[in-house]
Image (cartoon, rainbow, N blue to C red; front, side, top):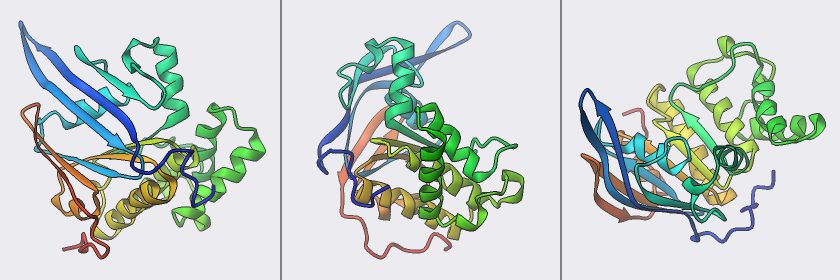
Length: 251
């Protein structure tokens, strides 16, 4: 995986755009409106932090943007897909497989597979040959500093190492879009810093549009853009310059 590869996209180009996203959930006989007409966009090469308190709608928004949860109203266009939610479920699945990387707070690793096998599995689903999947898996694991751990299973890895395997699995696909939901919340400060720096590099060097949901204000230093959401509405949307020497997450 070339460090300078930007998937043919210009840094700063809009990768994803949403208009008027509304999502309601039924509780008993009433509906709770979790997203209230949200507009959103993300650009290649940017780390966009979506911040807000628990229950603000930030994870629901990312699920709607990434093709995991259909909104009740509104449209999402992503890359060449003019209307993501007008596509069949099979085409949405293929879109996610081909273009999206996902990093979750719970790691979502297979207990029986080694670090290398975790990454290779994602590539094989994309149609890579075993030899190509092996090559790209080793490159991605090297990029996250896990070459010595390639044959270890999740039970033999620390929390930080598990999250780095999950990031390698996402990066190996060379995705256009990376969705990270609370990627540092289960980690100590040092490992959290490693993880957020890897996401920063995925944007800057690989040209991915990185959308990161977090409630940790210390991560703002790594962002090109910070969006605060509360009660299903965007309160503010601020572009900023990432801090070249961000403060330690350990404090």
